[in-house]
Length: 378
Image (cartoon, rainbow, N blue to C red; front, top):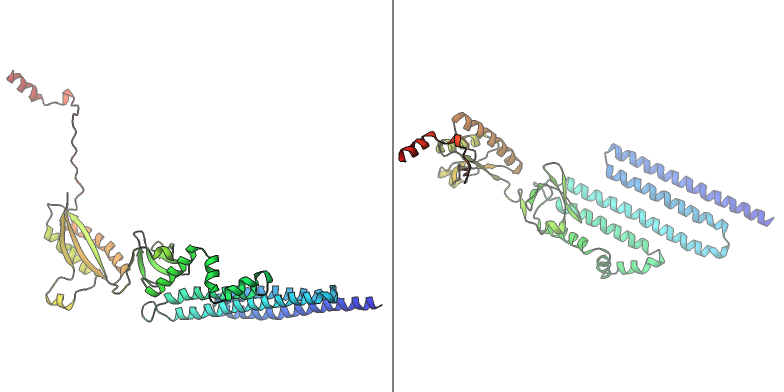
């Protein structure tokens, strides 16, 4: 009789645990779904993805706690202490996981707001906020993993050493590769030395030209003018020669170089190049007040050298930024070529002289007068 009563009590206990777990999960999931709908209305996709992750963690967390509570019905009292220890570990890991996800979401939202309120060049520099966002996210996950590891006996010693002041660097240095550390250090150097910022147009080495789009712990993302993303590790970009078209004065001096034939009117060609440059809307007056007083030309045009088959003329034309300078260069080459055609200024093709030695000449191709001359000489 006692065994039947105990079996019924165990059955009611298991059913009660699973019903309570189901109700708890239903209430929490419904609340999180409501938050997801609110975020969709506000077009906040970042918070929506965080809440989706929280839904999965909460579901697993409630399932594990319910399973451990239900297991009391299948074990004797001497096993309760072991179940209690494992249950406490599960609760601790679940709380740490939820707190870590929430902390990462708050950190991400904080830096996103900072970046959104920071204009590229007018009010501040978003580069540091971008990098700090990734750095703080990594640090939060590291602390969360370390705190969760405290609940697992085999990992407890590792977690304690990681939380020690001097042990953090030792653990990171032992786990991470030398290349990963150099990329992180390279990113820190970029943030503090500021050779470029988010939004700047830069040239890395001799091949990559584009706009800096992102700076992470590992790499810098550059969007080139083909709309492709070039990913360069921070350690490598620190070693390269960087040309920053937005650093300091953003005005760009564009060289328009054209060769004309030796028979063409040089002064007329120079006047046409100056006139076309001045008529372009992207051309700006970059002269100082002193240069204006001296009445120096806004567009300087000079003969730079005498080539093999052409007289090379260069015009120095200024634009407000790199993008406008590129557009102006393309337009000027077209308009100057059309004006040259109208005014009779020739742009020569390369000339080459070919000498054939010991070439065979057929007898019928010889000069007929040569035989007559030879006959008279004989």
